[in-house]
Length: 203
Image 1 (cartoon, rainbow, N blue to C red):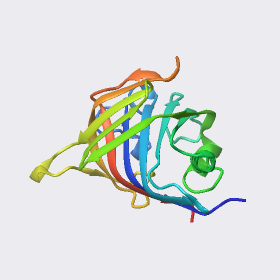
Image 2 (cartoon, helix red, strand yellow):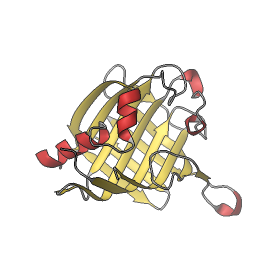
Image 3 (cartoon, rainbow, N blue to C red):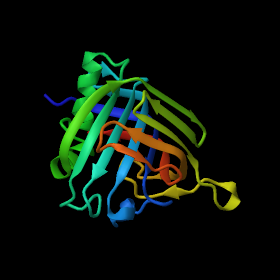
Image 4 (cartoon, rainbow, N blue to C red):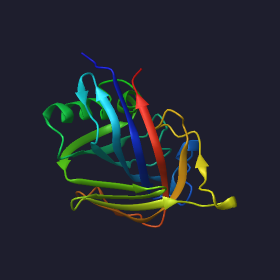
């Protein structure tokens, strides 16, 4: 039976597009494909009575050509789960991020996901204001910071689908490398990043 769930905390993504990635406007990404790594630090979270506080999660996405959220565009994904998670927590994370428990990931799974893999890995996630750093074993290294504009303020972007407010900060990666297998291997350092707080739920 589907459980009620809620998660919130820190979020960062880094992709192959120039700043700023146009997927949020339903336009084609640079090079007509999207290679993106996403990472979440769940500061507070629950799935039914399963406590998800403190867990880190990451996802790698590689798309076919076309608009990322276009109904015909299929994605291959890898879900990377914090090795500190126990069996119940891993099952809860898979239910949430593979769309089995409703929320934003349900239509993504139904419409876009062509293949999905999952791995349990060591994840190090740190944040200092608008500076983010994520290291996942020998799979991923991502460092990104906010893009500062007028009045020395970090810019914002909306609508972004992966938080309840639909607003995240604009940023740029300094390091964004992935090495998982032949398909999920890229270096998109120096390109777009979105980052900030996130909150998601299925109710």
